[in-house]
Length: 338
Ligand SMILES: Cc1ncc(COP(=O)(O)O)c(C=O)c1O
Image (tube, rainbow, N blue to C red):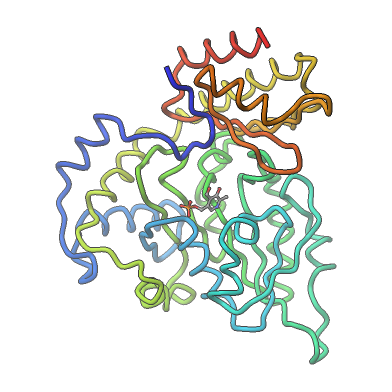
C-alpha cells in the first residue's frame, strides 16, 4: 500500500467520476458549443452570484489571466510573501502581465486590512501604481490556513476606497468553506474575480474555473486563447467537475479530521519541533534540529509513505480523497513507531 500525502492533487478519478465523464455530451468549446462546459460554467457563476465563469486547464492559468485582467505593465499586485502567484507560478506576474508584486509579511499567508493600506503606494508619479490585492484561501504555503471573513471584508473596503481590484486564489476555497461553514455567495459578493480548482480536494483529474462579472471578464476568453488555453471537446473534463461539485465537497470534512489527527500525533513525537495549526487538509511541521531531514523522508519512503519538503526545514502532508481510513491507520501506526 502506497500512502501518497505529497499533495491533494495526486488523486485519480473514481469509477463513478469516470462514468460521468464517459457519458458527457461534448462539442467544440472554442465555438462555445460544449454543453457540459457551458453547464459547469453557468453553475459556478450562479453558485458565486457572478455573471460569468470560464473553464481553465489549470489554477495557475486562471490566476495569471485574472492578474492580467486587473493590471497593466508596470503596475503592482499586493499579496502575501507566501502567495502561490508569487512563489510557484514561475514569475508569471512579471512574465505575463509585466507587473510587480508588493509582498506583505503576513501570518501563515494571511494579512490584515491595515497591512494592505500600508502597502499601497503613494500617488507620486515615480511609484508603481498599486492595482490589485490578491488573497489566497486556504493558504497553501501557510498550511491550509483559513481567513477570517471579517478581515476579507475589511480589505474589500480598502480596495474600494483605493480603486484596487480584488482577486481570490481559491484553489482550496472548498476546504475553507467546509471548515468555516461559509457560502460561495459571500465570496462572490466580496471579490471581483475568483479562481477555484476542481483538481485539488475535489478529486478531478484536471480543471479550474475563473469567475467574475461580465465587465472584468470581458477579455478573459481572448486572453485564454492568447495563453494557449483554448480546449475543444473538454466536456469530458467538465463532467468530472460537475460530478465533484455534487459529491466531493462535504466529504472534505473527513480530510480535515484526518489531518488534525495526524497533527495531534506528530506533536507528541520527540523528533518533532513544531506542528503548525491545522484548520483544513494540510499539515506542516518541522523536525528537531538534530534530525536529518533527508534521512527522515527516506525512512518514510522505505515504508511507502511519501511527503514533501517545503523549504526552510518545513515538511508537508496533505490529506485527500484517495487517502483511505486504512492508509490513515497505517500512517498513524508507522509514525507512532518512529
Ligand atoms: C493555492 C494554489 N493556487 C494555485 C495553484 C495552481 O494550480 P495548478 O497546479 O492547477 O496550476 C495551486 C496548486 O497547487 C495552489 O496550491
